[in-house]
Length: 285
Image 1 (cartoon, rainbow, N blue to C red):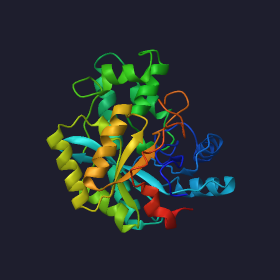
Image 2: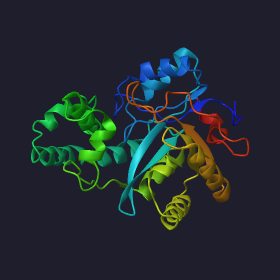
Image 3: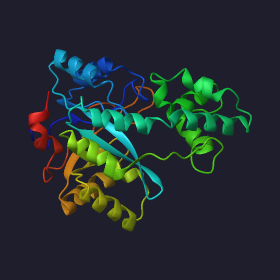
Image 4: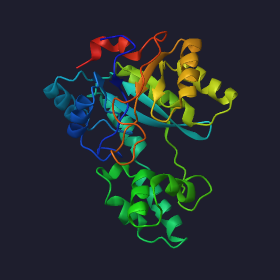
């Protein structure tokens, strides 16, 4: 159960944040795909955890609680995955609620920016794709813009409208790295840097992120994930070994139509790594 070859998928999203499937449907999809250990990691939200636990239990699918917390670090958004925590933690729930609080105001600003370039009704349009209005995000705007015919696909939306300097981009101040790691660890879980290859940090900035993360009690890093290339699998395997971090693996699955990698379809972790699930054996449901 603890080997690196375990088909663990510890990063995916449901309708509770910005995915398109329910926790129950994700559990069934993971089971059918041969996943041997699963975690639902909705953005800044743990409201789907009990549903995921119950669905996984009914399928005989081992499960770790999860979330993905947005933090601001060096002026950029970085994601921290939490695994194996007590999902009834009041401190975590309150912290995540505060983190979510600015999303509606940000979304309305995004809609105003899009209206200035001729795209009207974007806020109301995006809301139609939101399972949880507290978690309206760029992904929901992207789905609206594609379905309304403004762009061919989600990547085009981000390139033209939703990245820095584009009409629909509005920055948001998320949780502090110290707070996010603290909520996870004090609830008995392990904090993991999500998809580090996505942040486009310089080596110095990445070193600062990792060392500060470790200083606050962070213990893991995603090595094999849906947005990493084969070269990045190797690069972050070496990073995990250099810093003594536990290695994690997850598809970052959001939708059958949108996701680059399906649940359970990633290659295994390298045998030289220490998998995060080995340190969470007692937390598996």
